[in-house]
Image 1: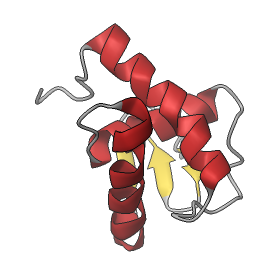
Image 2: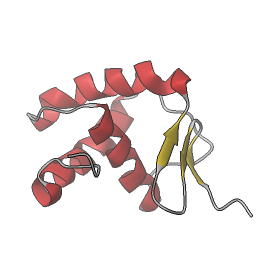
Image 3: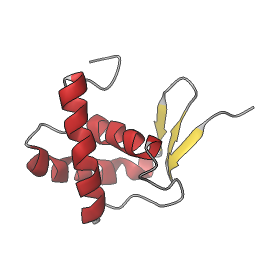
Length: 98
């Protein structure tokens, strides 16, 4: 039985909390990280963006059928709050390697 949860097209979360990202999203996530640095005034990287996307999806703010876009100001605005939460609540740590 597959218990993977689709977050958005190209990102899937396993039951153990591991995110799998399709390589085609690498540039989109990188571009979003760059865009999120200015409104958050934080050193945002791709892992922060991925964590913010997962948080937004868990709160029903993202549709698992709608692809991410690097040119979506509403997405950047939505993720800004989640990135700030990651830094405030978790000191910017998003993985076990941090």
